[in-house]
Length: 183
Image 1: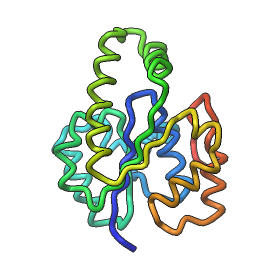
Image 2: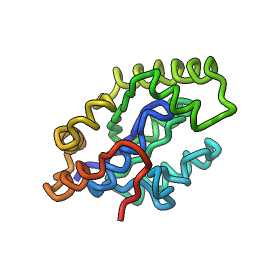
Image 3: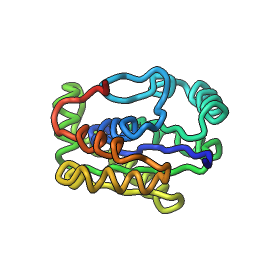
Image 4: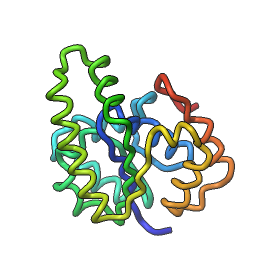
């Protein structure tokens, strides 16, 4: 097995949680202190850069294959790229207006122009990263429409001998709406 780090990229409210949950269904280690419904590792999410770097170094030593998702990692991605071993990026894109509306519904204090500006910044960063590293770009609406096809695509992309049971589990995980936990 080759060491690798799988990073889920996507703007807030683009359903990075769905992709992280699919990876967890496939047996990919996504962290110790997981927010169960959003599949975010609290050792990375909203942590100071020094703590994130410490966590990455620890995971590199302890896990051959591991991943994480943080919709705001565009803020520190350049700082951690040199630390990631054989990084693979899964970049989820959602209809821009749908993602913005979802963000505004979730955060009543958000200002539309600020959300748009942030998403544009993040999108540029993620697109630049996708050009420079192995990256699987997925469209949210397509994943929801054909979850088995996209579960297969993810399994093939990460190249980790994911079994049929895990692929079917990832497919069943994909249901639009509320966040889901993994039993």
